[in-house]
Structures are given as structure tokens and as C-alpha cells.
Amino acid sequence: MKNHFITTTRALLSGLLAMAFAYPLLAMETDALALESDTVIEEITVTGQRTLIALRLQGDEAEDAVYELFNELNTDDAHDVHCAIETRFFSRIKERHCRTGYELDAMEAEARYLRALATGEAMTPPIPANIVMAAELPKFQARMKELVEQNPVLLEAVIKHAKLREELRKRHDKYFDKD
Image (cartoon, rainbow, N blue to C red; front, top):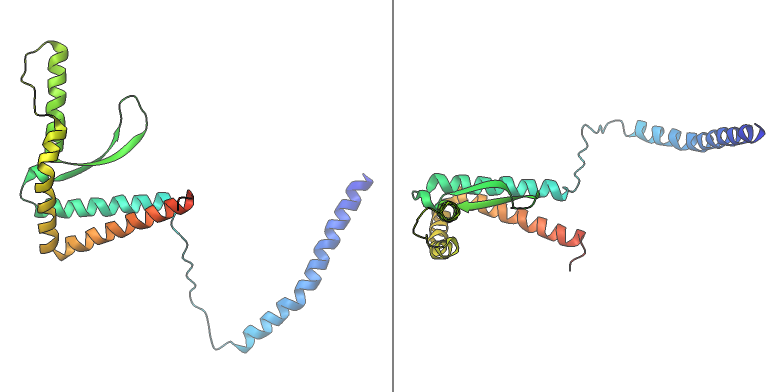
């Protein structure tokens, strides 16, 4: 009981001493503010760093904006890009993937063929998806380049996306100590 009383008294005295020392400082600050009464601070803005997650989400939104513009301008539906959150086989980890129409079609053809094999159905094997993707990639890149050169809004969206991804990469490397 005696120890509790001593501890409480010490805490109370420490608080009173802190207030006694702080009071003159507060009075000086108040006087200084009174002298500068003609300048009033109306707004203070504090800008912090974005978290890695927020930065990644902003990058994803910027990427969606790029592909949305591209898909509107593009006339070949096979080159339209669609993004989705997917889970790998034998995993619960979800990942974001953006794929063109021709990639999705080639992957779907492979899946149909594998289902046909599993059920014993006769079917001609499709061209492997990786070969289709390798053949179509230069056409897709040329179309993207052409539309970016013709459309300043798309160019601006691509630049914004690239800047966000670069900032994310740098922050990620710094955070995880990669030089």
C-alpha cells in the first residue's frame, strides 16, 4: 500500500513539474501568436507516402484505364485486353492477370482439348497457346504502339501507369532492401 502511494505521488509530482515548465513556454507561444494575429493559417495539408498496397492498387487502376481506352480504340476484338483476378491450380493465392482475346481463346482451346482427352472424345489438337501468343504478340505490340502514337489520352494513361509501376518497383526494392 505504501509503495502504491509513493508511486502515485511521484507520478502526480512529475505531472505537476511538467506542467510548471510547460506553462511559460505556452505563454510565450501565445504572445508570439498574438503579435502575428494578422496572418491566419486557414489550412494545413500533410502529404504522406502511399503504402505499397495503395500504390499497387493505383497501378492496377491505371492499367485498367489504359486497357479500357485501348479496347475502345482498337477494332480487332482478338487484341482487346481483359484483366481478372485468378487463382492458380492447387493454390489459394489470387493473382491479377491481363490477357488479350487471342490468349484467352488459345487457352480455352487447350482446355477443351484436355477435357476431350479425359472423356475419350476424339478431337484435333489445337495449336499450343504459347505458340499462338508468340505469333500474335508482335501484331498486338504494333497495334498498341500505333494507337498510343495517334491518341494523346492513351499516351497520357500509359505514362501514368508506367510512372506508378516504376514508383512501386523502387519503393518495393527499397523496402525489401534490394539495391
